[in-house]
Length: 164
Picture (tube, rainbow, N blue to C red):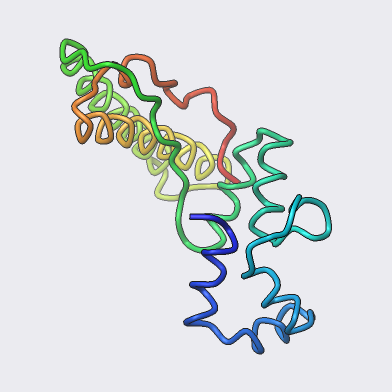
């Protein structure tokens, strides 16, 4: 789906007039965002979704999308890369998930040992949780696709930046 198509769908359930008022923009600009762009939809003429996409492409920094997802109460998990199926990687992958979950529980137990969790401990717990979600999502997606080589080749997420 193209960004303008999504915005068109959103405007079926959201008041364009209210959106314009909330954003301090003209109603015509809101409707313009929901139209198929003519020519090159970059720069000031691009709708906000295209601008965020351009920002992501330019920076290659996943913290932007993580921040957006957290602002709306969710989280972002990157899809695994596609590869040919190699079921022999299935057992080590399940072991990795179990180990990552055990690691998360160890971090939580250590942090809660004094019956309180400070900000640094909370960030560490969040980081381990994000890593576990990423590894598990890769595993689940590979299971759904019957394609287990993605499990072996997927980054563990342990080097990714901490969530904001």
